Image 1 (tube, one colour):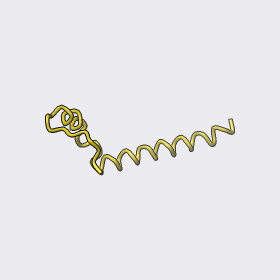
Image 2 (cartoon, one colour):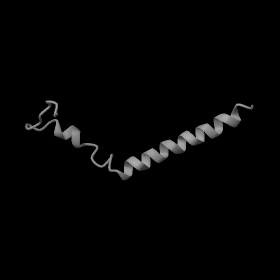
Image 3 (cartoon, helix red, strand yellow):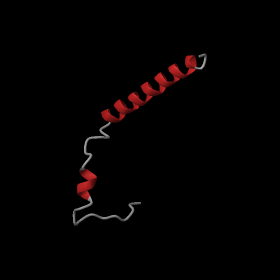
Image 4 (cartoon, one colour):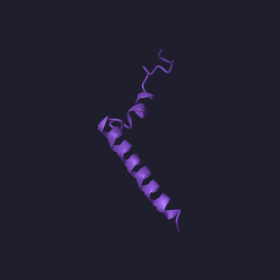
Length: 52
């Protein structure tokens, strides 16, 4: 039962950390265009060579 004193706060911390990263990525616009790449690859002017 002593291990629950460590596991419960650790799991709450990791859950809140993941939620914080999700909202951070949401604010930065990471999920604005989820279908863009799927449609972009079907266009004729798509270039798959690496840039750089």
